[in-house]
Image (cartoon, rainbow, N blue to C red):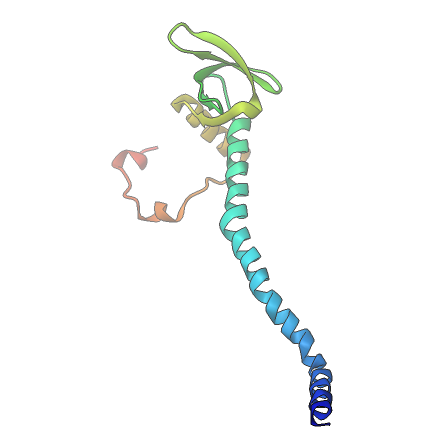
Length: 145
């Protein structure tokens, strides 16, 4: 009979704690939610920013820029069509055509960098400055422009 009494008290205690069971479930899910949020902030978000930056560079390619393909081929752009680019590679100026998706890095020539800056100024887009630009020393010839 003592065993039956202890069994009944255990059931009563279990029934009385079912109200707090839902809060325990929420608290047990909190670490998993925190891990997913941290993973998003540390891995997914920076990767998306990098992909966006790379896509902007690919869209801003011009004839004369240097590129590196995903296969490691380095060349100078000689022709750009809708979704393909033609590059001249090696000393013999071997012409190769690639899809724009095959470009991994774009190295703009100095002329094209200046041309892109002028186009941004004409379009009225503000120049993006980083936090550390405030602390850089200005050259004397920068003020002359």
